[in-house]
Image (cartoon, rainbow, N blue to C red; front, top):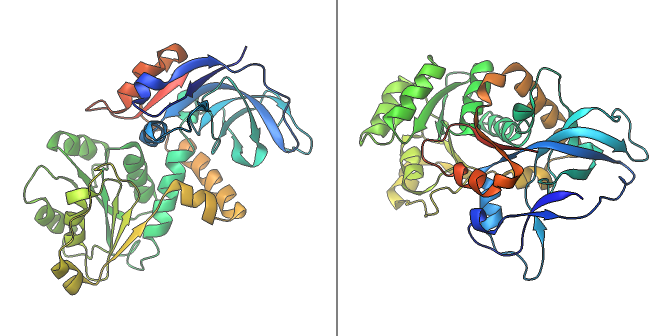
Length: 330
């Protein structure tokens, strides 16, 4: 018996996910390793993917990332052996007890990294690495330029702040409440944090920038907040959108376009999967492991659930005030 988290229709993930016996797995194929999963994370993007329309009559397995132990290796695999702790990403259908995974998408887990950190050490850190690379395409970033980091209290937002601080990139954290802003000031004492609950938050951002240019803003939200970020950018600046949590259009006045010569870019982990070379993906995965090893204190765990409480775990993902990633342990 092998259990997996499955769904057969679109809807509320907490209502449609099921624990299902999917039968015994086949042996790993050439270039694959078989992993007995010990834990997996639930990202907000997972919930969005599950809630999308499923093909009628199909049975889908949820998830894209997990951690566990190699139990068997297929032909041609080197550098991995039974007993090795690993994390894998991307893998469609990762929320299962046993998975046959392409070895190219598997990385060993350092002994110092516990399962609850290992479970989340690829997708979010890779996103942070992508954002840093995109931000540094602007010549001012890393010199006197300041990067605006919206939703800075999210898992990706906190990791980006930590990575930017590690590489001496100046940032300003932007969040929805003063409480969250203070939490970030406590965590990152040298990084200004601004709450959009303040009606003058854009002016506060400019004040915190201290006259330095603001060439880049990172935004996983969209909507009205993105419009405020655009207005704060220096001429020639770029808004990098990597999510759509607001589920509403970005209001854009013609005057903003006429007078500020800015650019808007989209960035997603799916683009990383399709547009980045295999060599770059391998480098980014190695960077993600290094981030988890050097900065484990920023991989907060909101809660840990057993497999049979998958509905409660998914509900927790959207719980107000949540800090960190929800992890399921098998």
